Image 1 (tube, rainbow over the protein chains, first blue to last red):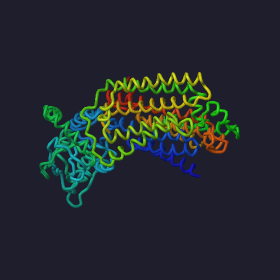
Image 2 (cartoon, rainbow over the protein chains, first blue to last red):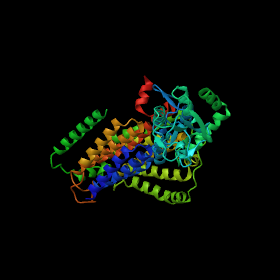
Image 3 (spheres, rainbow over the protein chains, first blue to last red):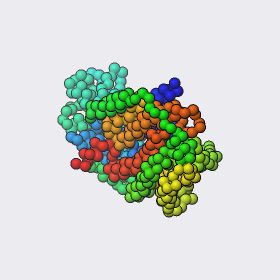
Image 4 (cartoon, chains in turn cyan, green, red):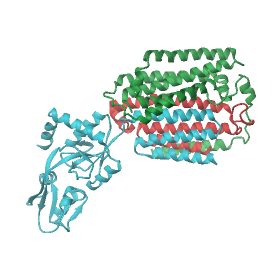
Length: 270
Length: 212
Length: 107
């Protein structure tokens, strides 16, 4: 009976470990699996093997894995596309923020994985630890993790194209300024379409997206009034990842000091 | 890819299950007296490891030593970890390590020395000694521990252990039966080799990746 | 016995499916544990006793597979350390441990 119990535990731990997305959980799970396996060996009347498995599988192997994944884990970035800051052109990802992120990846020897998502999804993904960084023209709200120093100044504006309700992007800072009866949209594209088709009369967006709409020639004759000044775009580090935030600040500080950051801003936002 | 993996897994599982179910229901019980008694030891596993399959074991130790050489060489071009963070001072951990290190070392020694009589032997002893070193390294910081060890001397000791082990193995093969004292020597050497190997891995990884 | 087969199967499946090198190594770890368990379970079929003279009444487990597994575990640790060194090497030089991406870069 104890043998069956221990066997089930071993199998469950192995399955747990191998289905994790985070390396750390996988390593810890396999360590626990090794310990349970040692118990099974002992119950199968092989004390020599059990001793060895416990000492090596649980102690040494786990430690060696931990050292190996120290800086090799993937850095998951969640983002919404925001034209000169972070965008995809064919297969290539480009943008001002991407340059900073790749610099950070090289600094930490970690691989970047970019996941496109909607603005409203960013905060929960950061909180659950599934992503370590958020990018793509984020104006962080106060409870959204650890923002870096301001990268690019911006402001929120109200674009009035006609009579009717006002719309904003769900999860965006514009949502806070939405008057009663306002409508929320998952992304800037849907917002612009609704505005262009006259389903809503106005929209609260940041200057960057407004500029993109103008540049694309898809918005004309709208009246623009400022809603909130003194905002800026930041990169946001997930709460609890103080070390990562510190490293990112370091990278940014270096880029600022060498004038590289100013050069990049001029190149992308001229 | 998933289909391929599923098919491979299923065929393996099926093959193994089929073969294990088709085994003859009664396996002949091994004659422990003849196996162990031949070498004058009581632990039949030790009799197999150092007696019947002696050369297998010796060359596996050689493989182990080779892998350690590989770790040394392959990590060299990576460069040292810069600015390793200071080891967090944990009073509990350091006290526990100081308290436990002695018993762990003695236990490992006991396992190696009595491996021919009861459960134990060189491999578990070395692994446990390695784990003890790991505990000590976690508590005091690997670098500070490494400063007390002469690197070159340790390397020479490792190679000496392998060489001595080969000699001991030859002695066992020659003198063969009824000489458990050779077993003690061989077990101690195997334990020493495995423990040094574990330390090499720990130290090298920490040196190139930074303290944990 | 069934557990051993399942473990080996799970390990093999993950070994093929996951793209991260470290997860592949973890899967290898589990698969080798399954193989060891298979051998130890086979040895146990000979008898329930510990294979040490005078400790338990005779029909004892077969010491030979146990001895094989004993060395296999230690060797696995050594080769694992070596494999991890190469994973570290790849990550430092290619900034990736994703097999598919590494292959693409190679082309």
